[in-house]
Length: 452
Image (cartoon, rainbow, N blue to C red):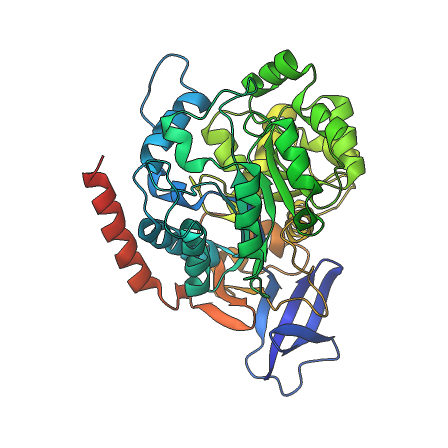
C-alpha cells in the first residue's frame, strides 16, 4: 500500500522543507518531494518526526505522585526507592500490561513514537520465575502492540545489591537472574523482533552487575548487535561507593573495562568529571537524560553545556514517568542549565540559533541511535507528528520559531495527530483505543491500592 502525507512545513534533521510530500510504502518513507502541493488534499501546516523515549520503567507510571510526602530528614533517591520496591512487589503480568498500555497511550499523545523499556520486573513477587520466564516481557510487548508504539525492549541483568556483591534482598529478588538465565531470556526475545520491536541489552548498574557477569554478557554473540543501556553515575552515593570499592569513578571504571561505542546509552550520567565528559563524547555513546525524574529524585544537573562543547550526543527519556512529555523533558533540560549558569539559551552555541530546533534535533538523533531504529529519512519507519495548526500558541508562527513555541510556550499539548509505522494511532488528540485502555488501567490501579 502507498500513502502520501502533505505538509506545508516539514521539519527534518537537515532543516525545514516547504510544501513537501512524503510517499510512504511498506510502512516506510519511500520518497520526500518538495516540488509543491498542487492537488494535495488538506495539507498539514506543521509536521515533524516523532521522538524516541530512550528510558522507561513502565510500571512506575502507576505510582507517580505517591512518593511526595516528606520522609526522614535525608529524604532522597534511596528513600524513594523503598516506596518503589513496595509498589513493584504487587504487580502481575496482567497489571503490567494494563499499566504499560495506559502509559504508552500517554506517550503517543505527547509525541513519543518509540520507547526503550528498561525492564527489570522479571519474576513473581516471591522471586520465583513464572511458568513462562518471558511472561513479564511479553506483557510489555503486548502493551506496545495494542497501543501502536514502537518498542525497544531492554531486559535487564540485575544480580547484586551493591558494589560489595551482597545478595539481593527480599524486595529485589523478582528482579534477579544470573548471566546464563539472562542470555536465555535474551535469545528467546530476539526471536520476536520485527520492524516495531527491537531487543537490546541492559545492565542495571555497576552496583548490580559484577564485573565477571558483565564481561560474560558482553562477550556473548547476542551482544554483537543491538543497543546496550546502563544506569550510571546517577547519585553522589553511587560515585562514592564505586570509588571506595573499585578505586575509580563509575564512568571511568566502565570505560576502562568495556568497549564503549555508539551502541551504548549511559542513562543519567549526572555526576561526571572533565575527563569523563570527554570520554563519553568521543566514544559516540549517548547520554540518556531524564530531567523530570532527575529533578523529582533530587539527582542533580547534567553538565549539558560542557558536554555539548565536547561534541557529546544525548537523548531524553521519561524514566519514572512523573511526567510523560518530550516537551517537558527538553524544557526542563534547558531551564536547569539556565538556573545553574544564570544565563539564557544555553543549548545554542551560535547567535540566532533556535534552542528548540537544537534540542529536538539532538534528542531525536540520540534517541534513534540507541533505540536501534533508522534515523528520519528515506527507508525509515513513518513516525510523524502533526501539530495543532488551530492552537493560539502557534498563531503567526513560522519555520523560524514554531519549534521554540512548541517546546517553550504554554502547557497545552500541541500534538494533534500521530502516525507510527504508517498508521494513525492518534487523531484529533484521541488515541484509537483510549477509553478501553484507560478503563482497564483504572481497574488495575484500584485493585493494587487495595493490596497496599
